[in-house]
Image (cartoon, one colour):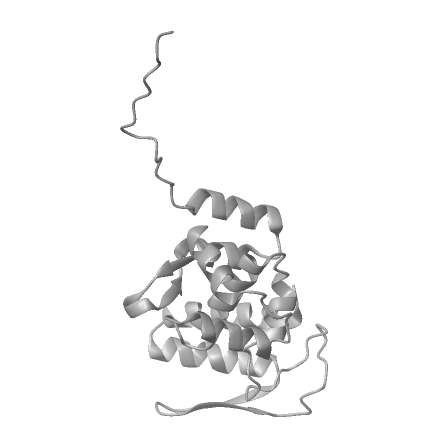
Length: 194
């Protein structure tokens, strides 16, 4: 896992833990952590900021490097796809849909949005973007949304989250994939005598 993903996971875990505490407890925890990592938290009810008390590049006794908080933790589309490693057009569509939903706040999109993000990620062009998106819909990575828009399905989200672990991703997809209806139901086969 990349350092960038580790940072995102750490921030999410910290935010989750802090949200369970009352305001006074949160301030105590932030102050203690700031002191440990040589940061002086400037905390008020309206503004929470962190000011380094010494060189940001300095490594402490635990080998940890302080990270400037103004730096965005959002990966670029190119980084995200490189990390996930999709192996087909359908998987790439799922990864792009996930990125749009979680990093661009676009939960409903058109095929053109996926194609533009694909170009931004410096990926090979889709030979037929509509067909690739249609296949992703058929295989359960995407779902229909309002007025011709599409969205990533729950199964598609689980699949992308599990990548680059291919066996886990396939297991998640098989477990969540919608069941296909049989077209043979109601048909009777009549054998001729003769």
